[in-house]
Length: 136
Image 1 (spheres, rainbow, N blue to C red):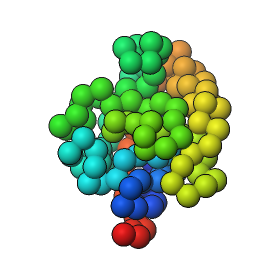
Image 2 (spheres, helix red, strand yellow):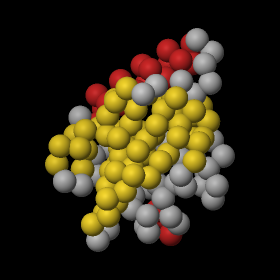
Image 3 (cartoon, rainbow, N blue to C red):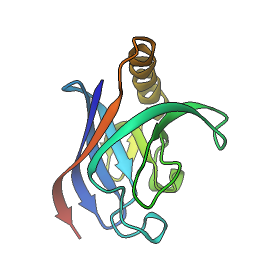
């Protein structure tokens, strides 16, 4: 399975992206802006293996990006604003400036796809790309 996140809007306080699974749009994403993520830049663009692992913070199985340079424990999880993340990728629909709605619904849709791919023995890869429209 291939997941692509096209980061399309870099703002001073958040980054919005679009998530596609095998070329089909699934939902939007929200991340910290380039300059805030725990004193580090955003997750570097690139391609990362995704494993379904138990999250000690959320006490459930969530997707984890593996071997992210300079980071540990980067996950994809539900959330509505940048206050809900410490550097992870949030999923939902960007219907209102700077936030996501229906995040739990988007997360369940993503997890269904990931569990199916995992069951089939597929390798899950996530590619982060920049297609930025900056507005500082």
